[in-house]
Length: 377
Ligand SMILES: [Fe+2]
Figure (spheres, helix red, strand yellow):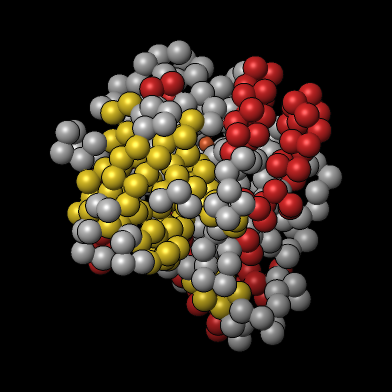
């Protein structure tokens, strides 16, 4: 099973639909008793007796009975409260750096493998790449005594619904996006959202902290990175810790792969001590001991497979990218429509759009490492 960005390995030799497992004898039947009958008949030997079992379902209701039935059979079982729905809305934040001048926080959303960032200085806050559950950013700002004054997306996201337009409030709290990404790349329709255009080389301040806008097209035409205090690079979906961006989500991989090559070549010229903070991760194990997904550019230049491919020149790099493109999830087209204001999914539709894998990054097909399949988001 793939729980959004997290892979959950289920060690069963076969999949048993729960309505078969439950063995209900009628509408009034006790569900817990039905679970026990089903497990006794079909799963007793296959379930682990010396390890905890987590029961998961869509909203945590059925799995509650499953966990209870398993406990009555002496398994060490617990239920995921709220199920996959609550898991999708689970966010946690950690400090990347806290100084007297400014602080930078990373917000992790494990269900989607999404990372967003909040820069705080002198009680001002800017939110970068927010997820759609915007209450978490209000809570973070309140916890550190700051007021959100800007919201920014590195690009028009395809893998998750952005919280940017909802977190922004017109001129009061502007929402920023590069204008090239304010056109849906497949529909070729202009966005119907209020946004303030970002420009390459533009700088702005959040309290005492300076932020520079760097344009790195390739994943999208309007892909930008934000360089904070000349040291912390919010790389969006250009460069991840274990992979690089996929250039095909606009349907023009052949044309955009050379742009990605040129962008990564420029990015690689930044100082080696630049701290790279991407917008996605593929494996929880990639976090450092503080739980933060970060690495220096110098480190990534030695180990990131996509950056290493730059040494093969544009042709070799593009061949590598084009040979390793993952499947194109159909939902990505609709998610971009929603993020551009061209569609308005309700809560149920939003949950469905965000189900499944986050396929953000290029990945070498022969790699055995546990990373997301493909080139990214
Ligand atoms: Fe993306």
